[in-house]
Length: 375
Image (cartoon, rainbow, N blue to C red; front, side):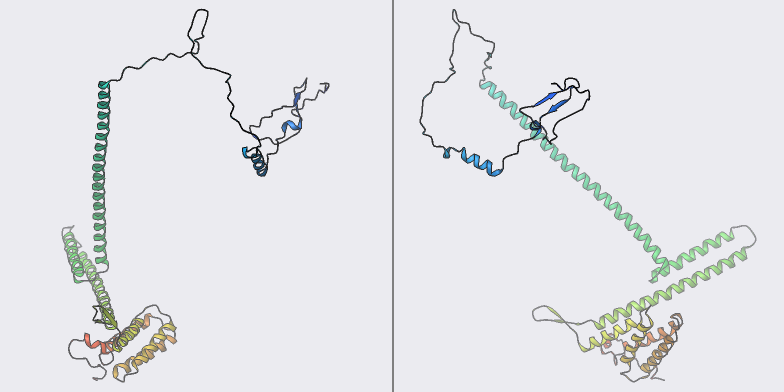
């Protein structure tokens, strides 16, 4: 009360972390008379330590009725407040300020019960009919969505089919394979030639002969391109046929068992055919390195030197020639003709039953003799 300093501090006292919502039962504080600054006592801002779990359990056991040593007895007692009904009388005033008036409800007879049941029945029927209608609408909506999805899928399938058909047509023009593909190319070329001829003849006078000559040269080049594509297609078809025959030669035998099953058995003939087929596949591979190519040629030389004939001697000569050229660093383009000839000779070796007994099943007519031996 006697502190008269002119300094206006904002807050004084002991600092302590108080929990949110903490209430101090004894706020020990006083305010500065001039500045109004509040000064707090340290105990007013310090929270009491919480009792431990052991202390709580010990206090609970101490306050349990089983730990009390008292004598119990039933004693009647008159209550302090009594309840009764009192009517007004002369000389007696009763306060009715807190009274509540209660009015009886209308009498609920059988007709009212029947009306209530009818209303409830109508309400139940209304909800049931609404549920039936919503379910029917959901079924119809699902059917409409399924139909729309089916139409969309059909449209996508038609578009994909059309795109695939266009891709097949373009592929047939770029890389023809069958006779039908080449017939289409020849017919389109003829139609183009007729159209260009008619356009030239209906054009302005002068220069018809030079235009027709240029058209003829262009047609000749296109025919050469088609013939080149035919040769390429024939070579690919021939290779596919050869691979299919070699796969059938090297396939295991299918033997029917007594229990109805099928057993696959490799015979010495099929093993020989598979070995030769693997050598042929390695011989026809493109892009091999020099060491890999020499290894393939060496294995083929070991396989053919078992037999003494003109065909095998010619293959050995070709193998030695290619190995010599590879060691000299010749390019693959310069060796294409030699490799093609060696591949054809080795294929003839594969198709001869004398060297490949399994090939006898695929021969038509009498066996052919090596053309070198016939000389």
